Length: 389
Image 1 (tube, helix red, strand yellow):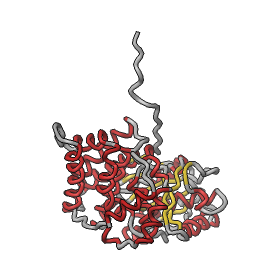
Image 2 (spheres, helix red, strand yellow):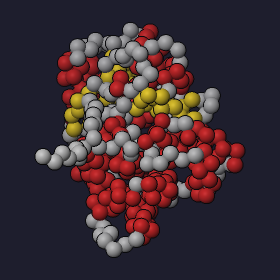
Image 3 (cartoon, one colour):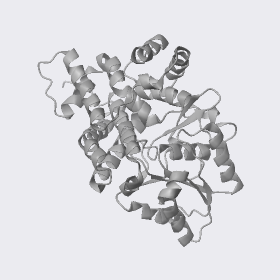
Image 4 (cartoon, rainbow, N blue to C red):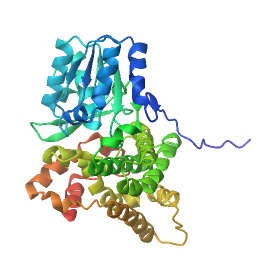
């Protein structure tokens, strides 16, 4: 009998319970009762208050005669001092749970505040992988963008304001208890944010597919998300209130999030965290700027996987040399950005030489770099940025 080596490596998959669909936001009340919550804090931002989605949650809480506290001072790149503010509210109000209503910034802030409500020290102490000793309170997430997937992930990204870079906190403790994903919340999302968050989701899908931590389970989510975004984003950019397009983008974001939460990411995110933290620039924008350039850098180390992405998008690569195949994929991404009027480049960030040095150093130490197809040196990252500015 001939013994054959297994086709599949051992892999694990972590995901929260989630509900997906238009008007599912109305299920928040059901889960408040299911979890026997009595004193939640609602974490959101001022824009979501104006849009009305947070008030939808307040109404459900009031129908249950449940008292709640509010923290709504979340900035676009959540800061360490905001974490401290929010965690103080959780403790002073004796909150037993967290309801996060918003995009990735709000949900990341809510996760970090949850950590600090039950653990000592500063949020900076928990940078890295599996460093949270005590569980945080139960969390319900209602995402209102189609990019971060913080509502289903093991990640929280917070800006260290003293050193001006984003710390990545990775732990199963950060997976929310339930995510209620209602595509209708995207109807109030500005077109610019719809585009940048969708390109963020695309980056998640690309990086999770070529990640050293990928598996057949995550692959199916990554590839489907890539196809959905390429098919739908140009149409949604022209008709941003079409609920069918918004459903597809929210679904793509969910699938990309399920993938990257289990595979981690790569060089795009490592550099984007560093640039975004130093220059206080929107995360999805940084990712979209870097994606095609990083593929150019990574391609030789993940040829098979990048080619699979091209083939899944319908491109016939037979008979083409490696350089031609790489150029096809890079051009496909550039063309998508052109179609949705995304024109920002690294040059537009006006990075100074001394800033590039600092950004490169933080990027090399970012946990996301560990699962990039190749581990670049500090000099290679610095040269990469200099070549593109």
